[in-house]
Length: 601
Image 1 (cartoon, rainbow, N blue to C red):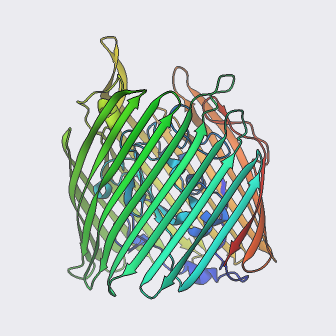
Image 2 (image 1 turned 90 degrees about the horizontal axis):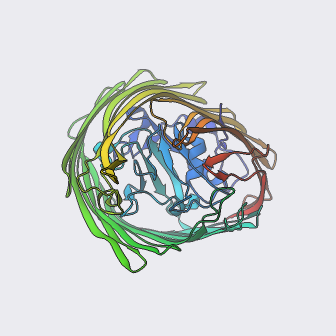
Image 3 (image 1 turned 60 degrees about the vertical axis):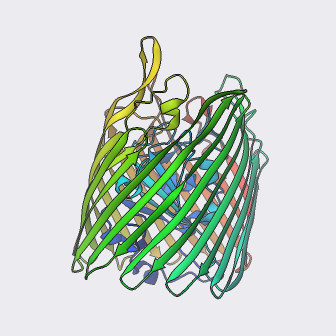
């Protein structure tokens, strides 16, 4: 079983722990599962929330590794101390319940509800997602295409960014240094005055890496502003820019691969309303990227569009959400001076999502989306679900949902296997789960069972002596997931999660058994955490032979609070010096040590 360490909630400006009993009695409110603020108990989807305390106490700069430890059924590949890279030898592949693809085109990543992926290749860029920018992350563990369309076939990761909440100024910074000449710098801060707020952050990481030719550098910047036009209407805008440089060290006993230089950026503007019996949003987003690889490949890609939705509450217990969204994505790819692709595609969709509550105990919902793609035409996407609270502390959930993934421009038009006659991949998933709270809500447990069956998967086969992308693959995955949080006393807490998956067809980057646990303890001025991650039968290669990896990682973090504003810490990773692989042919680092200082004003 894998153990994930969770830090008990505390106020960063005070040395006194918060009243966890009071905190845990509050019902958790989420937005990703309905696009409307709703109690998690009324959500039929399986949904995990990774909060700010967990993210900040990890002292990680990249966000996705934190999710890999915290969300059952979710796994992220890594290849070194920091940095995922792209192209051959890259990591950062995200899999949820065995669905993710290589690269991760079957899991949709959002930033504040806006889709994030490379316009040509169709996959997210993991190095662009920074832990210091995240207020919380909500993860739907299963298809959510009714609300979010293409790429939400396996699930959704919605990164909800920070904003300046309190009046006046705030400033936070962190410096980390450690093994293999690794340095990480972070600073963020904000200002709020009356109706106006602004928040900004900057990160810079660099490392020599634990192998020859595995150096990595990255700089990220983020800016968010908000203005309250009235008591019920807000204007928000944000922008981010990331630039990174990485070298593929190549497989062990091999030669180093290519060097990559990448610039990724995104921007969005939204007008959000929260009126008497209705609420919603109108927003526009834009993502772009410039990729240069030392083998002569160059690409300029973009992904832009609009999202508009409005939730109506016509009578007690009822909500109706109507939405319309669209996006255009594509770009230009070149090899040396030859153009190998220059195209864009368009997707537009409309949807309706209805939820009806019957008293405080029963909630039913259903949705339907009709998506139109400029290449393959229309795709209908239904979903239904229900939640039932037989007791105040018990919630039972069930849902059936369809997910799909549009073929990427790479699969349609680029490189020899391309086939412009491809259709979308599809999955139908059914699940049932139970949430239980005990001991005055100090102990929270969740158990989920699911089955997902996929069809029309895009595979590369040899046709008339030439490779060709065709819709011929299928899969059938079923499994169970368990997670728990236990606030034993205000200064001692434990979290854990476990997942098991049975796959008829093995999928790379998916472990058969995965477990994580965390133990946090506060003793005087010391905060001590111990985490473990157990991975059994991780598929790292499926052809020409099946290759699986099992390992256990033990990590620890010790922090000392010099004052309410300053603390110093030490991190110890892979304490047992485990020898293991996550990407085939790429050995992971052994024992690592990091130290640093945090400043919060």
